[in-house]
Length: 78
Image 1 (tube, helix red, strand yellow):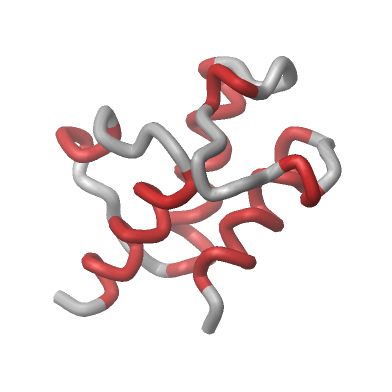
Image 2 (cartoon, rainbow, N blue to C red):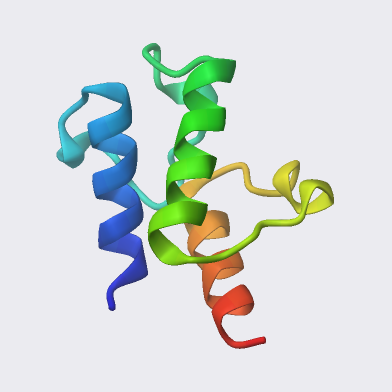
């Protein structure tokens, strides 16, 4: 599975934005449509659809798409 593309799809669907706006270094603060509820929805959808549990203490480090993808790959390999 291509985690990066699936994560981009989840973010685009959740926020109602074009997937082309989502780049590896895109951060939540770069997206006007993203707020704290959007962040929680994105994380919970990623956890549900990709069948992972992201530790709360790791959430603060997930500040862009690249970091989210790396975290998912790490969790899937554990």
